Structures are given as structure tokens and as C-alpha cells.
Length: 283
Image (cartoon, rainbow, N blue to C red; front, side):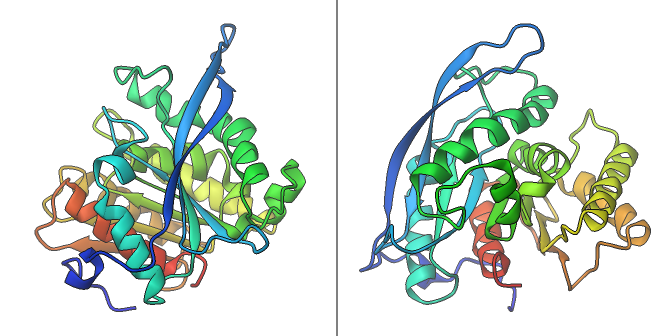
């Protein structure tokens, strides 16, 4: 794949073969220690044109950033759907299901970012993935037992932007590594209050655990712009990690895509997604 730094104009034209975005509701809990409360939540689900419940689809869970919600990717920026339709129609990526949930609870976007980005891992594992993959036709084939979700991890990816990028590291990679083989952290890692050295240690421990359990990393595709407010943070962590983590191999199961002049905005994040989907489930 050749990296580009502007979205190809063709990807933004209305596509004859259009996928469908539908609402998906599910029940979960806050999982707060000693005070867990039930929640009824929703996500948006992109189904590719010609979705056929008799075939199996790879699935990507895709997160928004801070202060917004699950509407971000598909409802606030419907051109994301146009890009996906064109990518699939042109064979740039394979047809897949994409789910956009939220890590916030009860719409409270003022919740502590450090807490919610990591705490989401319980909802993700116990409720969201089982509900989605019981309903839609993924490689889990409706069997959402933990053993089967682990067995089908090669067909499951997680990506997110900004605080969603932190969620990619924390909720998906560190805490649910056995359920995902593909990761796309876009514009962020530990944040301004984080500890970069602690993140390096966690990345190494996660990949060491995976190797010992026979669960290889298929790809971690980090993305940022060199003018992005989160660039120095993420770049610093990954540059420290690469030489001390033998399981992470640049060009084999890892890369760091940088947009020259790229900033912390949707134009960059759509471009990150455009490239990630050319790697996920294919590399």
C-alpha cells in the first residue's frame, strides 16, 4: 500500500453501491466497583452494500474522541459512510461491519477521561461485543462464548481517535488483547496526565503475554499528524517501545503513519481510517 496525504477525491463522490447505517441498542452496566448500575446504550452499525447474513464479515469497533458520542463518525460526518462505500466498491478494502459505540455512560461527557477510556473494557467484553456479534453475521457465527470470541480474534479490530485512541490502547489492547488482533490508535496514547514510561511497559507486557498465549499481534497501525497536539505524546511512546519490544516489528505488524502538516481534525482521522482499512484483515 502506498500512503497518501489527501483523501482521494473519488472517495468523496456519492457511490452507486451504498451501505446501510442502523441503530443498535444493548444493555450494559457502569461496572463501578461497589456501585454498578444498569445502562441502556446505543451504537451505530455500518453494514456494507449487499450485506448478507449467510456470509461472515470481519468487524471493526471504531471510537470517537472526547466530548462527543457515538454519532461522530457516521451521523456528524456522513461522508465517512461515502468513503467506506467507495473503498469497498473499488476493492480497496474488503466488505466489513463497523460499529461506533461510546465509552461515556448516560451521556455524561464530563466524566474523567483517564477512567472512562480504561473502564470501557468491561462493557466492551461482557456486553457490547456479545450483543453485536450475536445479532450480526461475523466470524463468531453467533457463538459469543469467551472461548469462541478469542478463537475468532483475527477477524476483529479496534480503532479510535484522540480519547478513542487512548481507549484503543487501554480498553482493547491492554485489557482485551485476546479478543482483537488489529489496532488503530489515531492521534493519542497516554494524554497530558499520563506516564509515557508506564505505557511502554504496558505495551511490552501485553505483547509478551500474547506471544506466550499463542495470540500474535496482526497489526498495530498508529496514526498522527506532525502538527497534531497529540503527536509528540504518541510518537514518544512508540519510539521508546520499538527497540525494547521484540514482538513489535516495523513493516511486519506495526507502522506509524504521519500526515505532514496534519492536525487534530476529522480530515486527518478519515485519512487514518482509509489507510487502516487497507491493512486490517489483510496484512
